[in-house]
Image (cartoon, rainbow, N blue to C red; front, side, top):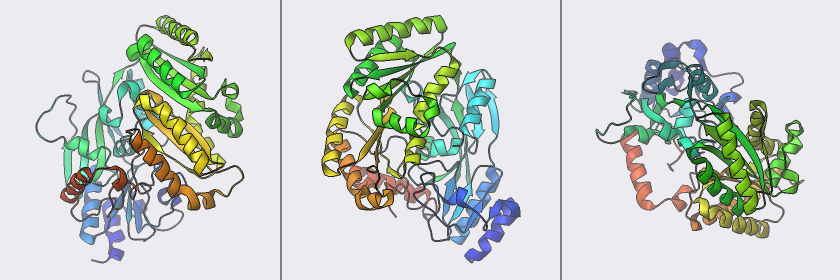
Length: 472
């Protein structure tokens, strides 16, 4: 069979209007960070799992590789085609239904193309909380969240996407459907196939639906913004927050002064508090199941203790849900503000919380010495040890030329520092294609061998998102 006949076969499966080969396909072929622009053989948009299976079978028969795609909001260039014009982009955006909500079992089953924000709304309408929350929630999809094992702002309390998932429906590289949409919290019947596919970035199969955990809605949710004198002070505040709030601590974000200055520069209407006079700010969330008065008393005791100990210099507590939303919007606007400032180098790293202050101090000094003029955008989910340690081009410099000259060197310096401090080079964004050549330097040979064996077993022809996660 020829590749030219494949689009015709795909049209017979999903309908001619849902196989795109001409016109502006940039929404499917350019990554969110503007780091890569691909050229597909076709973009195919199936309506259901059966169509996904038939699409995969057709591609397998033609020996054509598949790039699964959800909202295309990833940050590691893992969901756009290469420039060969030979790959099929399989977009799951049409598969956006919430199939079922089981109140007694506290679960929700939805299709992979469901927008995260819509999933949150469906849960809230039913009287429940779906806690996965991240900046791209208005456009990212459940399948992409699971494919990258997304984290976000509430991992501290509820865990990553993996911890929230109970079951999956997956189309394998052979075009077979694994119906594993169990809502069971205990199922000890062999290998955990679910966990193989979560975080695999579409390299083992295509997630088409999932059963996710729900939680009771909190009776009250309070947010505070605190200025702290150092990263060590932020870690000390985290310890106090654990002590005073316990399981009620659902968010703990840290932001450096330069990160907030970019928000102030590009979104001045947001008016971030306290950042001008302090090197770091922290955003805390307390979710309480007793009520607002109880939550506020807890917060006041925490902040009093923090002010007395010196780990907090100043703080404000949101007086309304609107104010709380604004504070969160400031935090979530940092990536967009950084994008507005220009091309940059992103590092999505995780470290033991106790090692973060030393890592930041040492690596900041190292980069300043080795690459003069770099501007460091440090922010992230301190509560679970995930830091977005990003590097902005020197002010006034040519960003593309800076990346061409220095990106590999900067990545090596940062990743080597992460390794010295016993961390990981990817916490929640995945490996994609940006870090695929770096992974062998920071993952053990034994681990890589096992990963290659799994890939070979589940995708023997290598058609599932090749060149991502593992080198081909």
